[in-house]
Amino acid sequence: MPDVDFVTISSGDLTARINPLGAELWSLTDSFGREYMTNADPAFWTGHAPLLFPIVGALNGNRFRLDGEEFSLPKHGFARHAMFEVLEAGPDIARFAIFTGDAKGAYPFAFVLEMRFRIAGTTLSMEAIVQNHEDEPMPFSFGFHPAFAWPLPGGAAKADHVIAFEQPEPQPIRRIDGASGLLLPEPLATPVDGHILPLDGALFEEDALIWDRLSSRALTYGAPGGTQLAIAFPDTPMLGIWQKPGASYLCIEPWQGHADPLGFTGDFRDKPGVVTLPPGEGRSFRMDVTVLSAD
Image 1 (cartoon, rainbow, N blue to C red):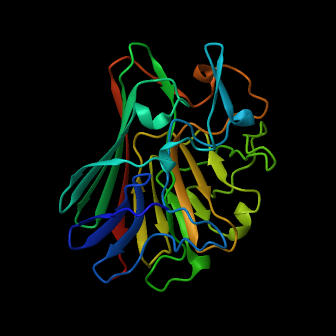
Image 2 (cartoon, rainbow, N blue to C red):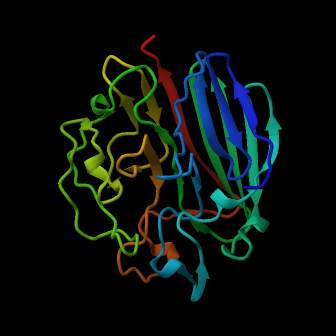
């Protein structure tokens, strides 16, 4: 990793450290110094909270087709590997951006992706703003991919942690094909009981749980009676939850978009989950994380 200076913002109650490489949240600690993010154990996964743009997940053959041309992109796109420019670094707010040139020919549109972090009290707000600088509609997807500590600090057992959705979630989930990383066509029965998802590493032996039809736009993660995270994602209609079994993290990933469906060879504009931004316009995606400490 290049030698870069991290940006730190704080409210006194909560402190975040952000790596300009990928505008990636690396650390979130409370006033007691307790860490709410992954330990990034290299035995499992060294990511922290990559940003997924202009795709979420894998493409069929790592390529997408657009107006008769083909372009190549790695899984989750290029933003997570791009060095963001620091636009602002204040006591409790930080802003980062990448521009069209950072795509290096892999994405044929003029754009700006700005990432804003703000802390107030025990809440970290993260907002991604995508701006279309083209004179034609721009198709894209976007996703958050933060890895939170599992178990959360505070002493509750890992086995006691649950996801409590804002709404009941009876609809089926989706899975990805292990060989290709593409979305399997068959919907599967949900492991959610009402609005509660009991957490167990065995859930992730076949990779992520994916909701492509999600009712909730908020959830709570943690152990009842212990430290919890209240997570809101008002602008993203899909969700992935993932870990590598045995790891000490849980990724809670609000998405606009997902991997290519297995066998998909259509135009990128027609891919399920892709949204189209009119010329000269912008679209924002927000994710708020509030620490609800047992203390």
